[in-house]
Length: 631
Image (cartoon, rainbow, N blue to C red):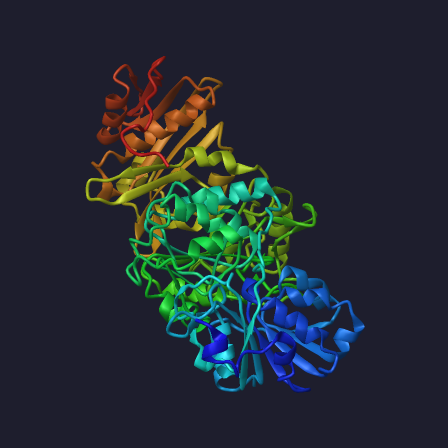
């Protein structure tokens, strides 16, 4: 379509178009990599413009001018999110930050809570019907231009046409400026490859095939995407598409086939990345761009079953409060999309949220898991919203947990050198009991090799993993759920009370080599509950004593046999050559487990009615849990 023929009165040069901006105007600028660079430069270079207030979400081009006193005397910048290039100027007090949920900003414009006089946006050339596309910048750009008194659009052939709510008719644009230039690109670099690799490993354990993902702002959520390459049929409902997702699209890891809401579509508001990415989304019906008002609405998000929100943080305190937008009194990024998606994922059937965070900052000198947020730090996500926190040291399950449990969960994924200090400070704050033992200062990444899955006959799945300090409360519930005979067979007495001291000593004695305890967890509603415990403890350098407890209603399903095979695999790795066990003669079920697993076992009856079972491992034959899929 030839604009000179269709609407010659609207077609202006950039210099002519910015003359439409009056002194004192409130000017909205399109977001991120879709911002109209040529219009921005022309506006700034027009020295006649004075006292202009600029509103923008993610800003890049303006960073070129903020060291210029002349610019600062003529323009006031207000940002809804602070990009990397703008942080320095925010720290210097040259930019004003507006904390707001992305889902609410379009309504703020529409209700004239923030009045807009002019909108500067960038669009693709119009099609035969007169429709331009906002391309890679729909988010709050669509509502910004609809709410402004005047819209000036830079028409750039390099802006890709995208599907969804990105279309704008030239009748709804007041002035058009034809100017071709390269779109901005955004290619963040991975800062710490080891930390990314380990966090990516843990997140991959949490994401099931067929899940729908939201990937939050920041380098870390996008840096872990390669670690999801082994998944199948993932879906996308997110604020921003980046290059990190491109290999997953091309490898058919992301197919959107399993989505129940807008299936076959990757739903987003923005695209920020490389020219290759822009070419991939251009006129690609898989991508469905909508306003932030839609994409970030928690009620819309919740319509996606199995929605997993993955976002990052600056600090997480031991009670579960999350700071994302400030380092102390210095504003650093923004509220962005985290709260919208965390709340939406909580309402999603099968959904949950993951906050990922490196355990330390400042080259390992400062813990990001803290007893309290830094002075001046803002709470973006409340302690009532948080589900899971992941560092390079593990996964903390926070949802519906007490403060005591949260402290133990979060302390054990903090950097080992800060764990004891965190526990001591938590005692002083009366978060935990004064006699609470700190978690081990070991790096427990190796325990991931000791995780197994067992599929039961009824279709239920058991997840088997080593006992951790944060399991103290759930193990208490497990022991009290058992029948008297089960307790008697395990402890050789009619124990009635399972004290905190006993349970603490249980996990405190576990060093994961000479002493090992495995727990089996089963999903019951939204909680995973312990249904079996298996342990070995060193007798001498070559043998270890084993003991088991399984909930009575699960007897007869081979759980003890499976756990025994798991323990043998671990014991062999730690250079043991056999097990022993002391079993009451009337405990026929346990004796049969040992007899069937180790046909060569020796059974020695004692004078008090107990039977000692000696079970040397068969050389060359590994009794491993091969009948069920290891994680």
